[in-house]
Image (cartoon, rainbow, N blue to C red; front, side, top):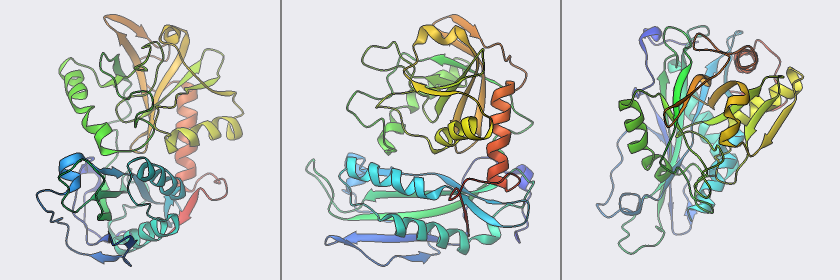
Length: 340
């Protein structure tokens, strides 16, 4: 049960220092035992690999309070596996899956009083990350690393209710073929900052990125996968080797098929198909699904039949079902919910 005196309704999606965080260092070819610390600061050499060559990757997941009062995390094993793939691609030492999961449990347990109560709409966001920590002046991987997990309470993603987004087809590229689009590397997000600020300045909520090879296929946004619903109720999500494998999106596709009995399909989605879809949503940890009401393709407005008032009916069912699984009001598939 939450013991902190916090106005959960006033929380945004931002950083709040909590009591303890997990830290483990890699040196001389091995990880140390790891420990919890109250110190939120990171002290680095001015020539640290992460500062010179952006050798860093991260994950994001949440801890919740369920309807029956349990503290749980949603599918942290998939975060561990995805971080392993990110580390391999970035030439960083793998932090073992079992140790990753143990670090999550330790961090949530140490900050249990910061887990928001059921029904508040808030949650405890967890950020596991790793970075090259020793001095590196030549262009090469670091030899020393630090793995950390911190926790911060975050408020409801949608304050005042869900409002469908207006997004644009971006002229910028998010990822290159054979690049790093399929991993959660910090550098991917750094290169999206110019585009998202520009989108906001132009009155759009997000960018939709196309494949950089042909610019004819939909990929994802700067921070979320995309799903579409056809006019006959099929759930479709883009397929590409440069799309980050979203845990939320994979879970929603399972829910669509196994819980709602819908037809699902993962395939390349062409830009010229956009007008044929009935609904669209952006999938991610923060909001589960952010509905899209309008897509603007270089001045051409594509208004989804689901409209700008609320989520479309299929998107709403997907959202409600997955949130129910996370909150403990709907039975979860085996292994999806980890109790702390």
